[in-house]
Length: 172
Image (cartoon, rainbow, N blue to C red; front, top):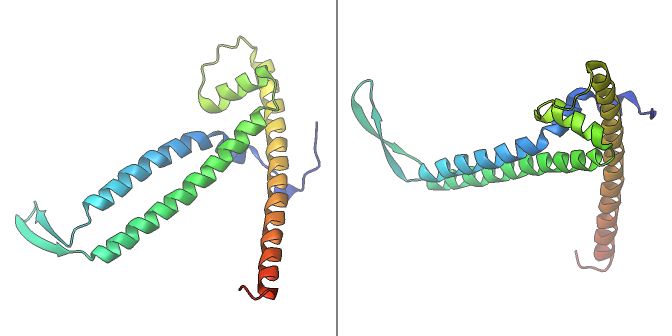
């Protein structure tokens, strides 16, 4: 099942492992975001007292609340983009996994998700199944990306058509 894919558009094994780990990264980014934002809120005060344990000196640090608010907003937006990107990868990977047989899914779970290898397969057969499953996943992910690009392009064109109509009607 070989698909002619331009070299520059191919999904290679490194990228496949990135897609396979996307769900885990999504969960860790959500936890990290909560911790970082909470720390930023805790540090949000017009005046903070600081203590240098090495010298024993106490000092006052002034922080612009407006700057801190902007920083919090920027961090939230940044995390939202990262999480959305990883979530998209995770969904694409899960969709691609549906194209595999049950045995191939088991092999992928062992290889990429740390599931114990209690499948009872010989090393040669395991590796053969793994290569076949990886090929199928790479092809499926490539196809899903192509479909997504076409849909995104159509949505962009429709948005532009709508804006042109509104401009012609004098609403813009």
